[in-house]
Image (tube, rainbow, N blue to C red; front, side):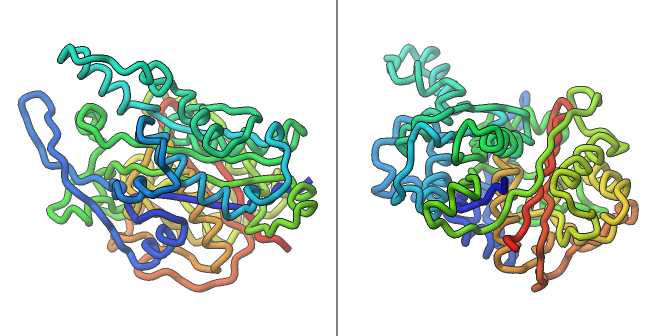
Length: 404
């Protein structure tokens, strides 16, 4: 059984919609703003990649204003994928449609708001009892779309959306559902989360905010935090054909794993990630040399980029495959990043473009990869690999293929 992708949707600092993400990547269009963050007695101006609020105030989203911002972003992205898939106009069994959503931090906005209300002794809102749960993410999406199949929110840190895609695909293969809305959402543009990431030494710095995130560059020194959501509609090819749906691409391979590398989770050798990548390639039944593009996790931290490089180098035939990262465009959206990168991967296949890594000027000589820099390249593609890494050793690999 093939699993087809029939809809994609995204929202991030690049704009609302998958086309906005794709075009921003090709044009190196970076949208950042600065927030003030306190860490002890020190206050810093930190660049972030945030979503324009106007994208969440459209008439079709009336009624979601009481939800956590993470859920709002998820609904915006999922709705685009849902409409593009045509499931809204098809005769479907809602019990056979699943929603699997990934997030690293969950509804932190609601948790923060609840705490502030307690401290200030303001009247609590009854809705917080439901909107402050992790399950509010998948639950609100299912309610909005009117589906009644399996509804799950899961977390595997920064590989969460990739894990959600894998779980949804597994449900289709097992026959538990006909189709699934899968991906991830994250909104952590708040002082509490960003100050912790700053104290951990994860955030980058540059006098020019837009130059802060520099994946694979010799001068890289950390990431930029972003927010957003990316979702796919995946379904069995039989179900899609029966309702006359048009496939954008095929989900041909997926795998996840964990390295025994402690809480930081990035294994310098890259061995664990290499095994996971190889498992996804075996599932797809292709040779590594057939892959045309790798969308890397590429955070711009020194250790992450080295880990991925070593992982790719351990798989024969993968070292020469073009590699890039879109983190300078989206920021690091934690658990949502693999969802956004899945959308970009499908767009790359569909439009036959190799996205370049914005801000990559002087590649690190320790990174022995075929890095795409300068400008994006028009090229025929059949297979795209997307990789993800996260705290506690979580990692994932997904393969997208053209419909032959």
